[in-house]
Length: 368
Length: 153
Image 1: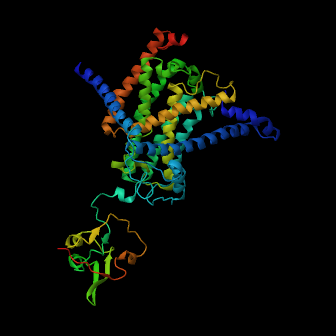
Image 2 (image 1 turned 120 degrees about the vertical axis):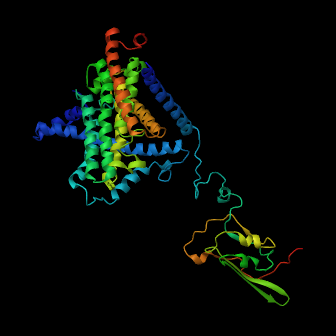
Image 3 (image 1 turned 180 degrees about the vertical axis):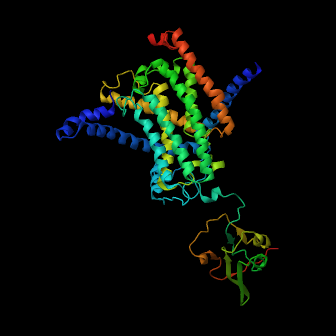
């Protein structure tokens, strides 16, 4: 098993073992180092995405956006973070205090946990689990528990409605998400994300998105239903500013609110990176992710982040284009359209693999 | 059969309308410039505050003391008595020794300007009246006494 954690382990094992440190402790430390690195990177990226969101929404609406703090307002997000840190942390009297305090951490950790198995290109992956994709699906459904918990514990009509809506929405949209990811699993035969990236190639016709017509549909189903899973417009029912004020997080303030907010924007990045890794070839530049020199590994990271960045922009772009759907439309879209379509994609991909002997649409072109 | 056709038409409509909307927002995103006026400090090249205020804006009052005939029509026209004029007669000449406008009280109705028979009062485009003490808003238009003008027939 290769990963960043195992590299750290190889690096420090001889030194730490010399001091008589037990092996289990070294393994835990070796996993903690990349975990902390990824969490801090994800938090910074979430902050940058808030800036990007505000700037792009301003561009779309002929406004200027944040432009006072730093050049082009680039320092706006650290300033906002500091502001939220300094704000008073209000815990209302009527709330269920334990659940109220626990919920933001649950939401944030379930979002960030998903990033543990995402291959950022090269050997930069915290843990290359052989159940990687299932791990992501399982962990991202923990989000529901956090939302429902915060909605219930707040003891507030709006928060409770937001929590209930998010539960209904995320549970429904989990199915098309998982099914559209499963079409790729049919092709690769493994759940390990690093292996899925390695099975693809650097060129678009080697990506799983263009494997056959059904994986293209599967990609879009995955992308749209993950929009619903991370509560973005047009599916932002749990927050729905105009009807629920702010949904499950109305009662929160200060850093607890910031955790919800960071989780929301981190999940944009994580979904985009998952789509990149599974459907768009990830950081694959046609070289071995572990055995190539460090310089090429960094190029892989760049490629990965470039693709992810484009998907993040599309996510933001969709938000500022489409209005919120009605809740029955949202449910109908999931159960009447996405689930049958993703099942059809799954079955048709299986049939395709039988008929074409496991080759994609462009296999002749790729052979040349 | 009809229902099946409707099902696929729904899918097509969803895709087409979404793409149409996203094309519009893309155009606004990439091409259309911001129309925001960044008022105090970034007004664009060569622009001043006067350029962003529309014509006939009713701002601060302005007195052309060489045209004023000292008739005090403006003082009487003012609904809230924010103009105070003192005219004194010394020797043969009538002198305006005081022409105060209290801009803090002024409601910018423009009745004084309409009442003026010699077009000596005018409204400027100046609107930036923020200050730390209200007495700063009492504008003395006449510092040294000036002789009144003769109304041209």
